[in-house]
Image (cartoon, rainbow, N blue to C red; front, side, top):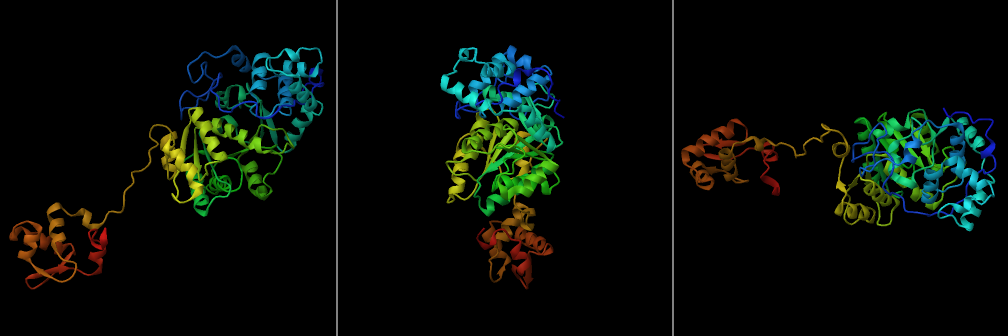
Amino acid sequence: MTPRAADADTDLATPRAFGEEPGTGTPGGLAEGPGSTAPGGLDEGRGATTPGGREQSPERERERRPVGDRERLARAALTRVLEPGDERGGRWLREIGAVELMRRIGDRDGTAETLGGMTARRLAGYRLRAETADPERDLAAVAAVGGRFICPGDREWPSQLDDLGDSRPTGLWVRGRPDVRLWALRSVAVVGARACTPYGAHMAASLGAGLAELGWVVVSGAAFGVDGAAHRGALSAGGATMAVLACGVDVVYPRGHAELIGRVAEEGLLIGELPPSAHPTRSRFILRNRVIAALTRGTVVVEAEYRSGSLATARSAQRLGRFTMGVPGPATSALSAGVHELLRGEGVLVTDAAEVAELVGDIGDLAPARRGPVLPRDLLGAGSARVLDALPFHGSVNGRDIARTAGTSADEALARLYELHSLGFVEREGDRWQLTGCPTRNGDARRGGT
């Protein structure tokens, strides 16, 4: 559970939240912190190098230390001040720490103005939000709904989020009993259109259930359409699912998913960057997608138009070196156009959970070989198949004519005909031969135009 805030240390009481202008950077930058070194290989521990092999920065090494009460309070306050994905705020956090950043914004001693990239307008916005921030109240509010607040340096912190670099979340508000870090290690995102077709909903639910049965955690955004279908599929299989929200974890959004969100909170995990009672905005939905991409080993897109937040998730996943996958749909459907464009690039075509697991999983996670049904005719030898092909679909023919059509001798044709007769493919009438009735014709792959 979240440690209780210290009664002393009143440095954090002055600034209560930070204001920020949204859209300060592009999400999905490569990390300077620890994380996975390759797609599908997210580490459980915190490595000493970045995915590119660079040495760990001193700031990131410092964050590996246990989180104190002052640091937790400061980061909780900052979630009310910094918009998700604020790279300037992330850089200041890395350089001077959360407690000092809160102090500089709260104190009017001129030190905040010395921060790189700080402007008078930006600082005024931070201070306006800081006036209403109350981290102790927020920590109590999330605890009241069975939640907690985790920070970089906590044992539960999923280190793959460090791959986001300075756009990494300040902290995560969490509802649910499972361990976020452990669940994220074996997770796949399933995202797609809100106004999906019945086909899209079916595929999302099938993927969710199939991945859950294979032991994967299904991650999505709890929205209408594909997101909701993926969550329901995982829950229907008794599996694990996480919903990454663009609002507070105590806020039900969309309202129509109140029951689903309640089930995820009870049986899985709700996580978000925004503090309790915070409501979603259009930009927060887009920025939320970078967390989905970074948290998981790969992202599957099920139905998406060209302008789609789901494709933003896939692009973030590609920038982070994660796997990106798409489920194909009708070429005439606008809802599949974005997916098909993804597949024309670096995306990998998948059609079921086994194919997803084969791509993002470990050695031995192989999808079964796909082939059509084996028909009785498939089991015939080449000579017998040629003789069978020589018989007309209607009527009967003598053995010499069959031999001539099959390109073999009369004795060889006769031997093959008796073999086919014993197997039920042909019938004999005097010295003439014909195909048997419906059972044989239905089993003949040559008939019927195939």
